[in-house]
Length: 502
Image 1 (cartoon, rainbow, N blue to C red):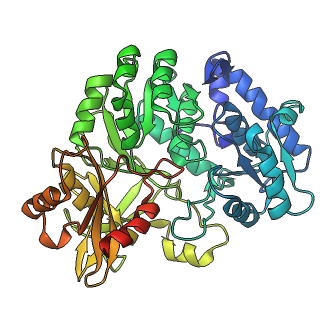
Image 2 (cartoon, helix red, strand yellow; image 1 turned 30 degrees about the vertical axis):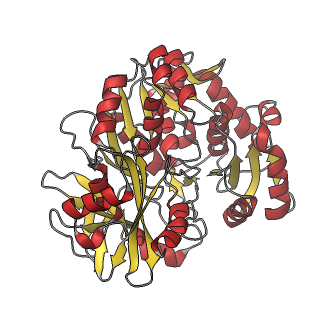
Image 3 (spheres, helix red, strand yellow; image 1 turned 90 degrees about the vertical axis):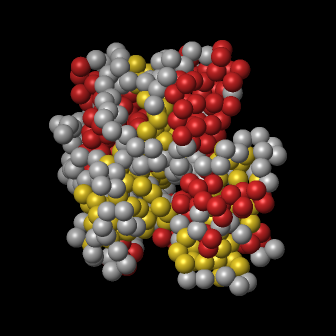
């Protein structure tokens, strides 16, 4: 375990050992560890000068930018709690988050300063502040470290709110440093690592990559967002060694065949993927193009966030999310939420580790329902094989009950993905006048016209259970992604109801 016990100072060892080493790169800007250390201290100094201290919440409304990192570390160095805000959410949702957290103010990037002022007016009390990068970097650096306990809250991200209002998820210094330390060891990160951050920094995927690489003394290249051509050129320009994302992103990279030929991507040593199944053809195509493996993993904001990782070394099983990370306990429990299911059976994943949230902000009933004796009920359904590798089956909320038969979307998707004409697929439940709920499939073909709906239906009847076949199949050019880069199941469910009842 790292000797650092305050997340705002996770770079302190690197600052001491190699202050001049690059840590953040963006376009022509290159920040060293010493630069980042001083900039974070200036943010902390500005906040401390306004009485923002231990326990205060501060919203962080910033698009992907190195200054987001300065703000994140600086808020915590002031003794406050960072509340990362999803810039892609509407103002009503952001106003709710700011008010629910009780933020003392907002730090905002140049593109969102005016928006932050409107949000302050609508959601925060008189006296709340809004600050942009210019005034933050003109402040005097904070002197000395704030008093703190490792179990103090350091961050309070909010869940996406896809099934209701967003929920605040307090996370502790101890828990976040524990997870970053374990991830850097599992992925063998060291000072030679150069990771690409194209996913939103407010999301746990990019956020944990950032923490683990900085703790290891490596560097991160920040892109404003995911653009396949821009990513390939960044890999070439900066000699990127590590990538993280969702399978759809990797497919988009591989589709840029001309740019792949022009760019040198041989520096990539390792990539990770989550949120959707990684198919055999994607693994093979990526290995062929980049000369590096893709490993799957699993985590959730309130659960560590990382829980399961496919090892960078040793046995790696296609379709598996890997094994529990060191120090993380997991159980698959049955319907009684107590008894563990056997090998090969489906159960709900329960998790206990130092990174699990101590409780949802202001929601004691939800906390009592989801967290018991330190164990978190994830609401994700999985099965475990005889070697201890875990396989995602679906969300308990996404379970499709077809006239009394349980259908797991992931299993339908995996069967359809075996068809040579199917490149990508998502299955959701749609309301049916007779069956109640039925599977509806949204399919991306390898090429237009490669298969018909009738062909895929006939194929499924040959390889899968009759009750689980998709009652409707719609062909789409690409599966929709939400603001965090995950599959936008909400929009598919809205469309599925119309298709299933047609």
